[in-house]
Length: 259
Image (cartoon, rainbow, N blue to C red; front, side, top):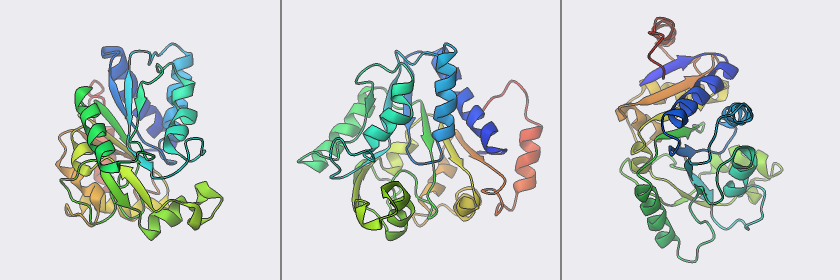
């Protein structure tokens, strides 16, 4: 696992560099897209680069998760959020972005179909991730199976409170259930790039990077991934015991290496 501690704007550029490198090497790259506040600066940077000529026309993308039961036109439905924040700002083809169907009549079948769609696409090349204050990635809440696949999950009180800001501050408006890629699904991606900023994420980042692998902090499974990158600002890194070492190793990194 590589840990990079830098200002938020630099973190966004680094993540966008990784995406651009893949697209230029293979225009049919498969991306994994996350919602929440952490990836927004990355999407802004990718949209800027698209204006400068970076094409997504032959790429495909898969979403991490989706609320259950939100109407198709609800602004906080994650398919609509992804459309607004990135898909409509670049030249992704119609239908190139897929997500789990939170309005399906048969939710288990929809989850199985989504897993199959990712497999049929050859898997995700680069998965963008954020992290919750309780250590969840996607909607894999504490206690999630480390071997889990796409499934329905009940959101914790903490997650619903954290997400209330997107629903006018009302926790009651936040759905209680979601469909989410499982931890094993996420771990199948070839490169994981997680971004976290702000002191509120400091304990989760500390557990992710330096704690034991545990279902109590689901993101810790990333320690077992062969190509995982954690991009954090000073505030999110404030609980890291080895913060100075991570800064040193990044400063001394060979220029050719990339993320």
